[in-house]
Length: 113
Image 1 (cartoon, rainbow, N blue to C red):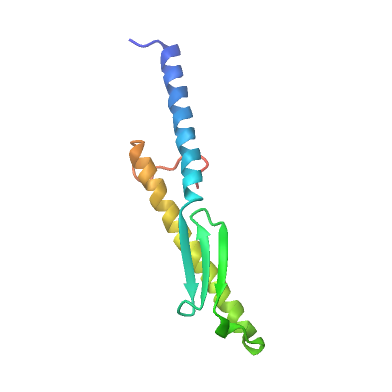
Image 2 (image 1 turned 180 degrees about the vertical axis):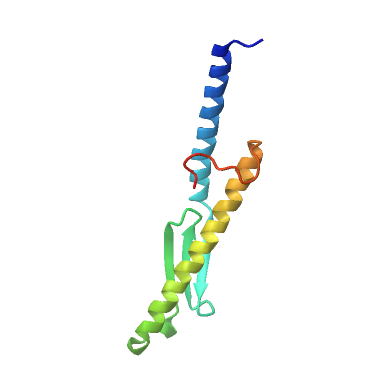
């Protein structure tokens, strides 16, 4: 039978292993790229699954001073589209990681929302 000390050591190692995997997952999420778009692709936002914005692309046809409000609305819509896709990509990666750790689906790790 294991001693209490051995069990605590094993629990500590498991916690450190989970923390290491969580850190690796966060790094991976920052390398997963998504693209949000609006206006049929006239405005595009590239972002990471962590939500870091990588770039904005605006079609030349939208650069008209009179259409400034339309452009601003499309940029907002593209940001929201990118954010939704980033959240979905993040959730998929976390589910994959939790599965590889043997955690039940939907299990919330501390500090992971």
